[in-house]
Length: 240
Ligand code: ADP
Ligand code: MG
Image 1 (cartoon, protein in one colour):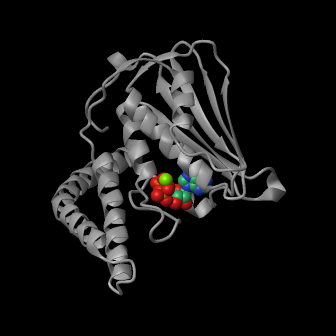
Image 2 (cartoon, protein in one colour):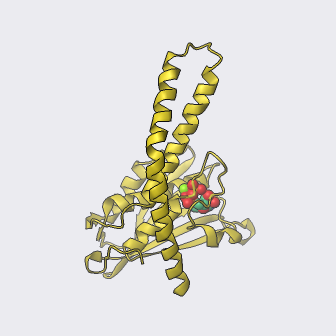
Image 3 (cartoon, protein in one colour):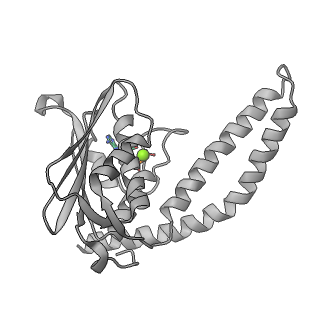
């Protein structure tokens, strides 16, 4: 418990720091991107400078992605709760991302009570982050299943993949900002940190189960989010 509190305090501070840095970087970055694109437009296809300009433009584009990830992560701690059909939310989250070839997707409901109060946009972001991670863990194809379960008081959304799984030594680092195993230019390591922040703001929790060892059974990962069914009374705008 103490540990969890410390972790969220640290995240809140990192959020403030990130927001500051992201705001400072946003404008100069926009200028670099705009001028490199203007110069690219003026460049003839065989101009030797073209390759350099393309590199500047693509790297500035990448920086913009990081900055927008930081701004998302540091988003003001407020939730706008509305009544949402959780099955529709899950389906929307799949419809909103590009599904790789060889991956099947499925939404399974184990409860008939599908209405819950939550911040639709923020939960969409949570599920989008989890879906993307699931797809990225299945480069050779597999199945993504979202399972919805619950009772009168709470409900859960599990995002289950049949990917490579998460090694034991990485389990503790998953929600730490900037932790990524995807290499330079691919991951920002902000998806799960942002997810953690949003789930906490909904007074929910997130559990992870994973298997990397085919000898022990099918490999893959489950991220399960558990949230109060009627969050209105429980929501605060703090980050605890
Ligand atoms: P990013 O996707 O940019 O790397 P995330 O915060 O979304 O950042 O994820 C952090 C890391 O957690 C990933 O780099 C990966 O190592 C691991 N991870 C997250 N989800 C999964 C998953 N479904 N299967 C395997 N590894 C995962
Ligand atoms: Mg990610």
